[in-house]
Length: 251
Image 1 (cartoon, one colour):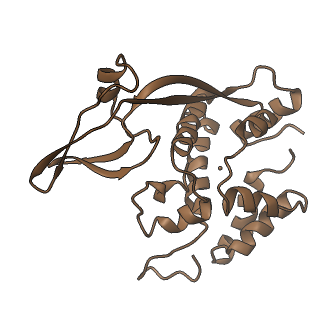
Image 2 (cartoon, rainbow, N blue to C red):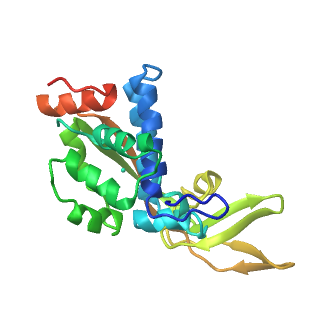
């Protein structure tokens, strides 16, 4: 976002840092300040993981730029739903070296700060897979390192397969997405006892004409994610988890 020019849109590939990570710290500030218990923090984080999991795969850099383009697939806000050194150290370092000197940070400075906090470790593969790429983040492998676990509850529910928005004129179909989670709760309650493959009448309005489309009822897996403390965490993982929640690490 450098140089700053508030007379025009500030397109950047780092919005996942400037907005996404700061949104994460907004929740951390609440738990670290004793305003909410850890269970509430886990719940808020679970909701964000769920939002990203339900969305179409998108690279974080693409999502950062998309906020200025407003694509209809819902990816323009995905930059929100990310031992001794931690992300705290990265942000503190950038605060001292850039903000305190009256400047923002560049992409090069961001990754330099990340590598420094990690003892010089390369993040090229991480960048290719999860920032520039669309690989799903390995929650089940990473979270246990911090004494956390992501649990999934799966059920079969009817899915209409469209994304909708509601305004004063009614419900508007904005996108048809195979396997999408766009169905309304009322739709699921009405058709959940129907047999999969049975006829499903769908009526849409095109201009002033009502058009009935033939369709069949399709079910899909509905996965509900829950973040929780790992009761089997090692002592090291427990210390890391406590460091995240308190902002301090017992050395």
